[in-house]
Length: 154
Image 1 (cartoon, rainbow, N blue to C red):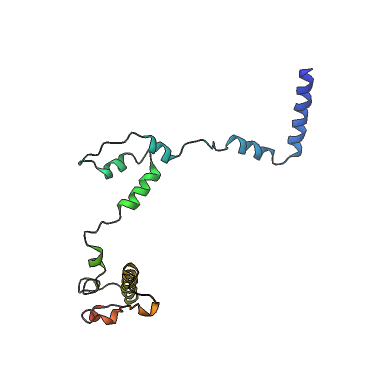
Image 2: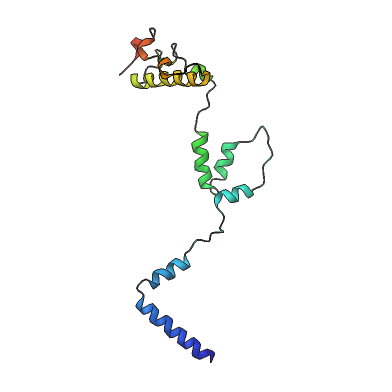
């Protein structure tokens, strides 16, 4: 009896395979389906033991040696660690009195300089909450700076 039901279901599957042109595709998808419970690279990283904090720890060296195991994290670290750290206070960095434009720094386009100066003003106005309307906001332009006008290159 069991062999008869197997024969019936086997012949049924055979007929179904012959009539279904995408049966091979369905088999391929079923055999190559990604296990939803598989762990990601980040999961494996979080399962690692935490290294003790020591002053001699070399983060760049660690990223280099573990790049084979965590290639995506290595790429992210390269992006983040490539950002230069500035020792200049943000006020000094955006100070328009000869620091944005100087004889040594005059490669920025005039529109870029004006955008930097306006952004600085808008941010400070927002931080200080000194203005209640947009009319009160003043935006220094490149040409408001007397000392640095002759250095601009277009």
